Amino acid sequence: MKYLKTLCLLVLCLMIFLNSEAQKNTLTKEFYFGCKSNKSSGIEISNPILYDSTVGYGFDFQFSENLKFKKHTVASKQSIYFSVKLPEGNYKVDVVLGGKKGSITTVKAESKRLMLKEIKLDKNETSKHVFTVNVRSPKINEHASIKIKDRDKNQLNWDDKLTLEFSGTPSIQSIEITPVTTVTTVFLAGDSTVTDQDVEPWASWGQFITNYFSEDVVIANYAESGSSLAGFKGANRLDKILSLMKTGDYLFIEFAHNDEKQRGEGIGPWQSYSTLLKEYITEARNKGGIPILVTPTQRRAFNKDGTLKLTHGDFPNAMRKVAKDLQVPLIDVTKMTTYMYEAWGVEPSRKAFVQYPAFTFPGQTKALEDNTHFNSFGANEIAKSVVQGIKDLNIDLINYLKPNIPDYNPKTPDNLSDWTVPMSPRFEIKKPDGN
Image 1 (spheres, rainbow, N blue to C red):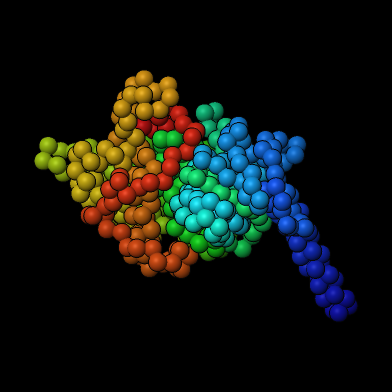
Image 2 (spheres, rainbow, N blue to C red):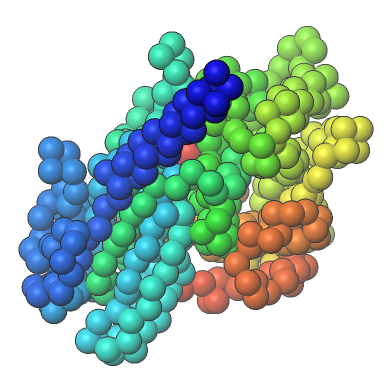
C-alpha cells in the first residue's frame, strides 16, 4: 500500500510537470522579422500586419507605415510597437537586435517600463538581450478584482496583451517570449511618483528601475496615481500583491504625497499612516515577503536661500520610526531628493520635472508647470537613487542588479544633457491624479 501511494504521488507530480511544460510551450511565442527568415519554427513576419486580438499578435498603434522590412530584420526611424496577446504572468523576453545598417534601440514594455537603454550597434552587428516583464490583470480571484479608475482602464498595463516599444532608430531581428515562474518578484506599492505612467511626458521611478535589474527579477508595479496607504488597500491592490507573493519576494512601499492631504480624527503621520505601514509590513512578512520602506520623493519647492522646503511634514520621520521599530530596511529618498534638487538649483531642477512651454506637444496650448511629477530624465535619477539605496543596504536583492552599475551620489546628480533616451510618441496633457 505504501509503495502504491508513493507511485501515485510520483505519477501526480509528473502529470503536473508535464501540464506545466505543455502550458509553457503553448504560451511561448517566437517571431522572426524580414523577407527571408531562415528559421524552421516560429512565426515569420515580412509585412506590417496590424495587431488583431483574434490573430493574437501584430504591430500596434498604427505606426506600421514607418516599417522597412529587409532580410532578417524590420527597421524604422520612429517607434515600433509590437503586441502579443498573453494571459497574466511573468515572461522572459529574448530580443535580437541589429541589421545591415547601424542602429540605436531603446526597448520599453507595457506602460513605458524601460527594459533596454540605447543599444548601439554598427552596421552588420547583432546582439541578443534578455529581460523579464510582468503582465498583469485586475482580477484577484473569482470574487474580487482591483478597482481601476476609469481614466486608467485603457492603459497598456491593464489590457490582455504584452506590448513592446522599440524606439530610436530600431532594427529588430527576432522576439521570443517565454513564461517563467521562478523569478524573484519586486512588488511596488505607491503613488503617482512610483507608478508606471502610461504616456509622455509623465514618468516615475518605478518604470525606470526595471532597466537596472537582470532577467532573474521582475518588477510588478501596482502603484497608482493619487493613491494613499488607505486608498491603495481599499482598491484591493494590496490584496492583489499578497495573492501573488512568494517567499523571498520583495514589497517596496512609498507613500505620503496623498496621505498628508487627508483630514479627520485619527488621521496623520503618527496615527493612521504609521498603523497602515505596520499592517503592510506584517501582511508581507506573513506571506514570506521582504518589505522595504521608501520615504517619499520631495516636491520641487525652494526657499529664498536655495534650500528645499520640507513639504512632507512629519511623514518621513514617521516612516523612519516604523522602520526602526519593526527593523525594516529603509531607503531615504526624501533625503536623497533634497540633496539632488539643491545640487541642481532652482532653475536647472525644472528640467527633471514636467515643465514645458506651450506648444511643446501637439494640442498643448498652455505651459506645463508641475513640481511633483517627473519627466523621464527626473524619474531615472530617482530610480538611480533607489538602486543606490539597495546597494547601501547590502540586502540580497543587490545580487540581482545588472553588473557594473556605477554608484550614484545625489549630491552630484546628472544633467539633462546626459539623457538622450527618446520620448515615446503617445502623450497626454492632463496631469496624473494626486498632483
